[in-house]
Length: 163
Image (cartoon, rainbow, N blue to C red; front, side, top):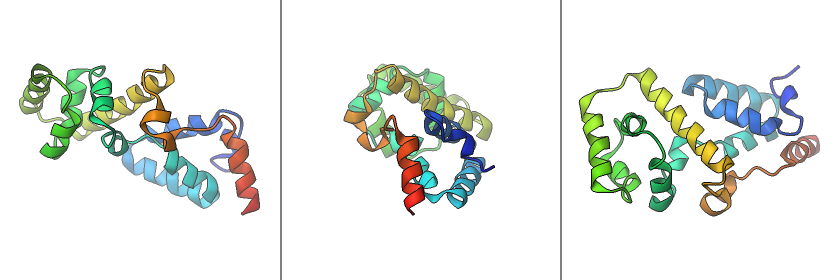
């Protein structure tokens, strides 16, 4: 039995995407490679529908302000540590000076370990998924390509059979 067999049921694709997007980078790459080898159609779909921090930070400053205003300041400070200043400025552009100062002060106070960094990246992804689920964020407006059709398992299975 392959890795994706248990996810071919309704709702399974989304479960698999969530599992992979919150897995450590090296393990994530291994999982994706296993899935691609097992079923290229599913593998490519997972990569295309995965929420990543690199993708999130390309969204509009207004959307990012909505997201980052709901995430703990310490999580954001660690999340932004070691990133390009121009990127940080763009991401935090819609925040107040006081909010930005809090984040920058925390960034300067303590250098996060790789484990703390990984945890904060996962936290951001998990929180954004939660905001999408609860309707705070609307993917159809922000990033329509990330939307997952309700019958995606059927669609992917049909596409895989035709390849």
